[in-house]
Amino acid sequence: MKIAAIEVFGYQLTYAHGEYVMSGGRAAQSQASTLVRIRTDDGQEGWGESSTLGGTYLPAFAEGIRAGIQVMAPALLGLDPRNLSVIHQRMNALLLDQQGAKSAIDIACWDLLGKAAGLPIAMLTGGIAQADFPLYEAVPLAAPEAMAEFVRLRSLSGINRFQLKVGNDPFEDALRTRRVIEACPADAVIVADANGGWNLQAAMKAVSEMAGLNVLVEQPCRDTADCALVQRMSSLPLSMDESVTNAAELYRAKYEANACSVNIKLARVGGISGAIRMRDLAQDLGMTICIEDVWGGDVTSAAVAHVAASTRPDALLHASFFNDWTREHVAGYQPRSVQGRGKAPMAPGLGIAVDAGALDAPLFQVAG
Image (tube, rainbow, N blue to C red; front, side):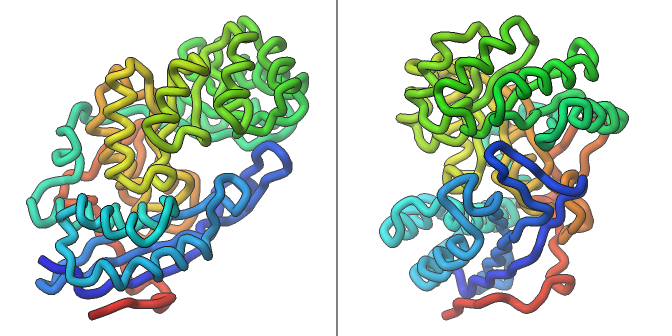
């Protein structure tokens, strides 16, 4: 099996609940997503997806994702997509970092590997450790009562895990957190996620105001070292996200910042390959893990589902299905959550069928 062509498609993903708001005024009603289809010389095809959350969440943006793929794609023609090690060696020889672009290609290669093996990806990434798993939903930053009402409404769908957006005024953020906790049952899992939005002083004030609440604090500051300083002042458990980009940063998160949990996003670590490597390290370190991506639709949700399903139940805090958060569906709204829980599709590869006919013409194609 050899890569014969790589096609890149673009489409918009509209947020299902109006406007997605994070700290620092970062907000959007829709996001651009990039789909990759890899065609092989024996007539097979694999799909991958990568979507940034605007251009200010991570050092990545939609046009950069597409440009990165265009640079790497010619060098991948003729390679066996099932040989992920060689695929990544070739991509890394051409571009430093650019993990979002590499992630879309990586996911498509895993889709092809699973199809060739006749197995779902989860069976190839450690085996299916859990038939289903808990999902969380993000609560956009808003007035405290509005965030509490969002939680009450989404709880009707069976969701019992929420990541509320904070990272602005620390006193208002503490009030937001209290109102959300009051709106949830006692066994709910609540994460107050600043997305690195607090400076050091604001973060220290926020964790002081939240002391005693049943909540995890996620990525209070942008840098791991600053998060470590904040954690020394806090009695709340810490989860890390944006600054954990490799194994060294994962060790720093645990042993310098005293984090007990880590959020692993596929596009931040180069796709499924990077996610399972980081996942296995985090499990060995005794940390809990959130498995997700930066943003995305059906293809992203399927990729996340396979990594989550092959994660040990005691280690998986929760995952996210972004196709529950967005209106557009390229694979028939599969996989789909049920009462706040998700499953990995059991057909070979990603286990979903992308409707290429519903997409616009490719943005570009690279073929041999």
